[in-house]
Amino acid sequence: MVNKDDFDKLDTDKDGVISEDEFEKGKDVLSEEKGIEKEKLNWFLRLITLGDRFSFKDLIDRAKESFVQFIVVFFGVLISFGVEQKGDDFEDREWNIENLYNLLDEMNVLKAYTEEHLMTIEYIRGEYKDLLENWESDKKSLFIWVYGPKDYGYPLKDYTNRMPFNPDRRVYETIKLDGTFRFLGTEVAKAVYDAYDGNLYQYIKINADKEEEIFTKKFNDRVDSKWIYDLDVIDFDDPQFWIKNKNYIQNDYFVKYNIFKRIELWDQTIGQIKEYLDLVNKSIDILQKEIEQKESEFTIIYWVF
Image 1 (cartoon, rainbow, N blue to C red):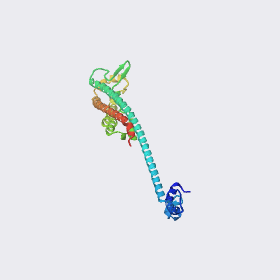
Image 2: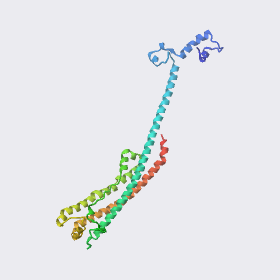
Image 3: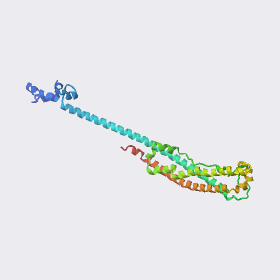
């Protein structure tokens, strides 16, 4: 069966009839276009030949077709990876912004905790400063705080109490490990670091722990090394103990000086906490602005390749 294209090639005089001469002249041309018989090829061409004939035109056509298919598949896979990567980036950003919101909430709790800590220290410092200023008083109940009928407090009994500065920082510690800080700019990361691990934070923490311990330990050592030998009975819960031994305690200038130096430490800590609160407020403002900026650019960045 001869198709129309082959017929047109054989019918050179275009009379619609293929003569014997036209057939003899054209069959070699058709044979070359349809390809060389496979048996006449070398081993390499036989290996890449499909069917029983080899044709350079067919080889080139198949090469072009294969190349086009490769390009389509390659760019399809490339785009798929790109979309998948952008999808992962989108999820990472969403997770990081959620972390920033959690961190902002924790920093507001940190601020409230610090403000309460400051008020407590100011109150305690005021009570002991009042005691120190009235140290030479003739008042029998000098070393007793009277709250109501049969409701007493004892400043020197409570003197060994300490109040550590230990705000919640679980969110901060978590995001330090999960890479959220790489998502932030240098200014924001520094502001958060200063609020949680900066010098002021460390000073306040040390003052509330190690420095306070020095004064409470010295007081306890004074009681253990001197009071127990000079006084008949040591009972800090008995109001009569403080009344009976009032003059003795007034004359113990080691204890008085200890209280004086501890008040100095409280004054220093109060100043540090006030400065620290200013820092925390600035850090909160910076973090809030960062969150607003990330939210505003969120959708646009997702589509950038």
